[in-house]
Amino acid sequence: MGADSALSDSAEQDDLAAAADILRSDASQLLATDSAGYAPIHWAAHNDSIRLGKLLLSYGADLNAVGDVNWTPMELCAQRGGVDFAEWLIANGADASPRRGRLSALLCALLGRKPECEAIARLLLGYVNEVDAGSAIKLYDAARVRATLPGIPRKELEFLTG
Image (cartoon, rainbow, N blue to C red; front, top):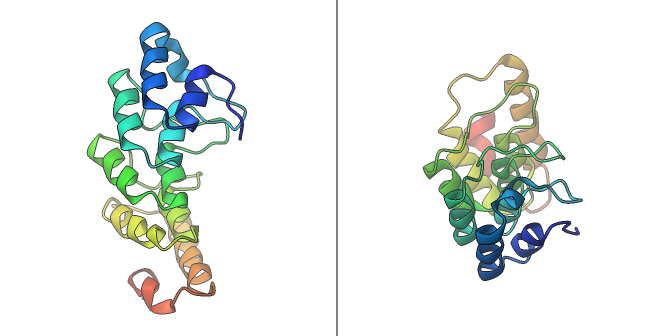
């Protein structure tokens, strides 16, 4: 994945010092997306970098930003298994609820193949208040699919499939 702006490049490399210098001189780069469709906050989620997330948030980063590839930072770190960053996002006001017509962070976590994805799914389940029937079916199907993947015991997802 290549970055198109200096800030995106610094964020992709998790270079906090360079990112801080760039933001001090041109805070407008905070909103730019790169060729991968990521804003700098997406790179922080991708790298599970809370320190970069804090820097970006101090300059006004949108924790619910939807990148060009239609993913939020929460969805990205859920799929990648970034438990610490997911918790940090929630603690700082990111939306953790499922969204109609979108691939939700919870679904991303259920489909993620890293063991940490289950921890994120459990974290995000605490923010599911009202799930429409279509979303409930998608979540159930995702849990069934994930439970059949090699190396993931079905027992791990009983909390969703019953």
